[in-house]
Amino acid sequence: MVKAKGKDAVEVSITVKNTGAISGKEVAQVYVQAPKGKLEKPAQELKAFAKTRDLQPGESQTLTMTIPVRDLASFDEAGSQWLTEAGNYTFRIGNSSRNLPLSASLTLKEYTEIVNNALAPKQKLNLLKH
Image 1 (cartoon, rainbow, N blue to C red):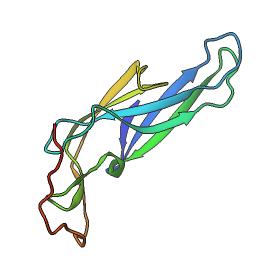
Image 2: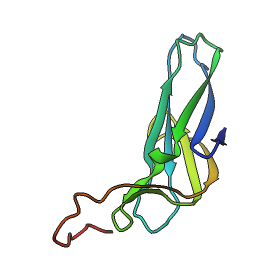
Image 3: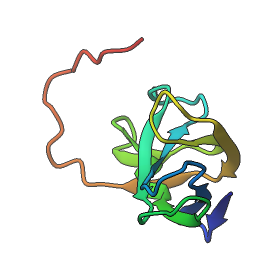
């Protein structure tokens, strides 16, 4: 389950069940895909993870992870700010970046955090783009 936790965070909850024959632990990882916007973003980014306690066969545990909206931001040089663009974010959950069987979407509002441009370069930079 993915839900907004106020305007400053996203809460992700998942229930992990040991379906095996012996006790064990599992790690749940949350990867986020940002909407296409003015800033270039990777296809997905690891934003949270949590580990279960030692679960006996058939036992379950619910893991809850909180992701601050600021952690979804990228730096916008033109605006001298951290920016989380408004739009539909996809949260994928699994035990590795190649095994993400669960997903949920959440629409977020824009978040900005303006910073001081004290160290602005004196020459134009050639920025890498796709």
